[in-house]
Length: 195
Ligand SMILES: [Zn+2]
Image (cartoon, rainbow, N blue to C red; front, side, top):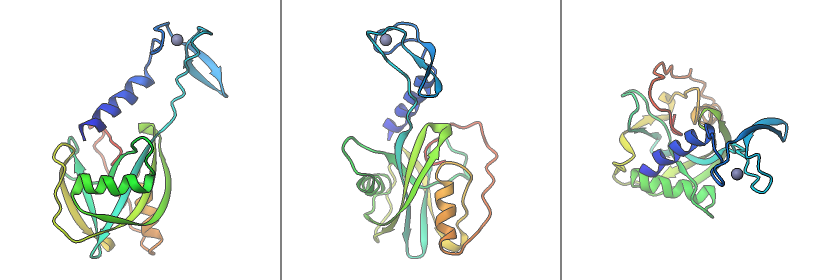
C-alpha cells in the first residue's frame, strides 16, 4: 500500500519534531517517565512525543511445504521478507494478517498459530507475527506495494537479522531447523516492516 510509505514518513518526521503539532510552540527536552522526551512546554497544551511503537502484523504463509516471501518496492533484488502490514483501527492482529495476505498476495490464508511480538526498534514498530496456512490459488501481487514474490521450501528458508527475521528464526527452530542468517549488506535502501 502507498499508505505504508506515507506512514513510514510520519514516523520519521515525528522522531524529529521541532514544534508542537498541536499548538506550534517549540518543543523542549523534558524528563518524563524516566526518559528525555520532546514535549511541549505549555502546560495548557501538554503534548509529549512518546515514541510509542506502531503495531505491525507479519505472516509466515505456508502452503505445500513452502513459505511465501515477498519483495517491496525499493528493496535490493535479493531481499525478500514476510507479508506485513499495519493494523487498522479496531482490528484484531489475527484478522489484520489474514486481510493483509489477501490484499498483498491475493490468496486466502488461515491463522494456524501466533508466534509472538518482536520489537523492530529501527522502525519504531512492534511486530505481531503469525503462522498461516495458505489456500491453493494463483498468487496475485499488490502492485502498489510489492515487486515480486517467491515460494521457498521450508528446509531452504533462512532468517535475517532484523524486523521479521527473528520470528522466522524462532519458527524454524521450533521445527528443529537452525540455518544461519542471510547476510544483508545493503544499508542504503529504506528499511520497511518486511525487512
Ligand atoms: Zn503544544
